Length: 291
Image (cartoon, rainbow, N blue to C red):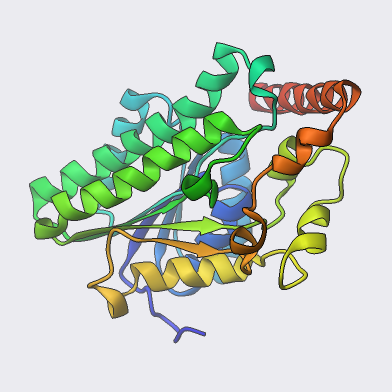
């Protein structure tokens, strides 16, 4: 839907760009001519993604192995990118989430989500934004949030709270930084199945199975739909659009609230099984990061 070379000359950082939604957006930006930088906790995964991208599209993909919960590491990454020229756009995509009854949630579990989603997103936005302001550069930030920022959701309280903070940051900095030519917007996507999210939010189900049953359009979202919206938001065609969060979910949040309220009917045994499945996935991810 976009002309070739639309993003030529743009330098875009996508956090969590090695997998899932971030990977889908990063590939679209690269195909449209941008120089792309991707970061994630597993540098090897990002390197594999970069090789895949350049093999298909050519272009330049920078790779960083960074845990965005580490403010100093984030600042060092952004500083390194800026040595070869300023970023033009930032996509805050890195996140974490899992379902849990809140009474079963440990403080460590809460912090695991809040430190990535709220703190990490601020660290990256702050590191990029202050360099834009100091250098007199214009810029765009697009953050990925959730529809629960509007109505909350049981069983994912750390994510709902943290994503709400990003929504508030988007509105707040849109007005504070507007005079510097910096725009901030956000996207609240519905279910677009990815491996990691599916295993932590819908253990035991086929990815997107529940959404396809209840969504007004009868289907899950597609990666290209998210990538197209993100591209539009950073494009030069909507420079008066800032401080907005746009829902992309086939109308599901209007029809059902798009929350995890239906899990109230789960038994103790189902919660225990889900917890066991999520724990196994976390251990698998830790083992992969150690390789």
